[in-house]
Image (cartoon, rainbow, N blue to C red; front, top):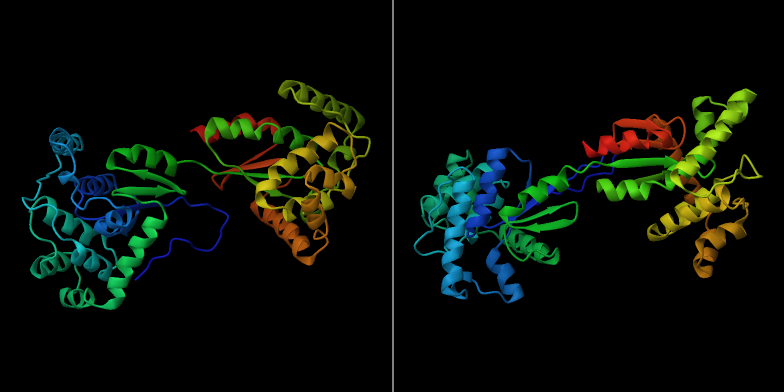
Length: 399
């Protein structure tokens, strides 16, 4: 009965909107109507709101614990929002809240069909009929094209009952405290009036950054990504690439800079200095160039995820600003900072597992069409090469 939104990893990251709901909440009903009217693709998450309230010690009927003024305001507010969203029909059932558990089970039994969901919401908030009544369930389920007898039999089974309970427990574990609750990219939003936040989160673009320590332009780019991320809200995904391996795969000379004629080399060297001054970052062309970076890249991959950014920045700075030998494992250990972690990580960088991970990362870059670093890919499709294209990258992320 469970749908799983967590599929195999792919090159594209799809952001999913999850919507937790129960039929007894008028604001969840309004949220469902906005989803239908705007044709928003959501993963529907039915839960028993009473179970959530019980778990957190909240009154089952909130109107009974609100003061008269706030209770009256909530009723008015509900109708205001209904008018605001295009005069959505909305009537409070005289005996609200009505029992919804059987309707929720029927929703699960019919595969969480959006047409079934719409039918139960209409029955509750427009027709004001008891949605746990078997005749009402039969009508709603049949109208959506399902076998009513099969659904009515299923709602009495332990499998469907346990499914609803498990979903409710999982919602509580994720921090859901009421409905409608939206979860997008791990962020939780409560209320039908937060849909604009939900859509903004869902529309955030992705940024993949391909880099190696061996490139001065990758160094310059690395100093600017944090600011770009802060301005655009993107969370960069950093992909280390063994640049020499990539060049060999695509038939490019190992060190393109050294293959240029002397005038072009001089221009490039001066251009790097200009960009460093432009970005106001320290820079000194290293005395050891080209540099063997394979150990540094493996160390990056062997580190815990929460230590990678600081290590990457430290090694970039060590090589391109301080002229240190980043092929020296003692230097790499110093860039890690923590002696115990450094010992453990450096002991593992010659392992088959870490070596294979760097090969996979490099091969994936080749498959993506990367031919040099730094390379930026926005939304899995738009490729930009060079730190001097960061303005175009930011423009793409902002539009």
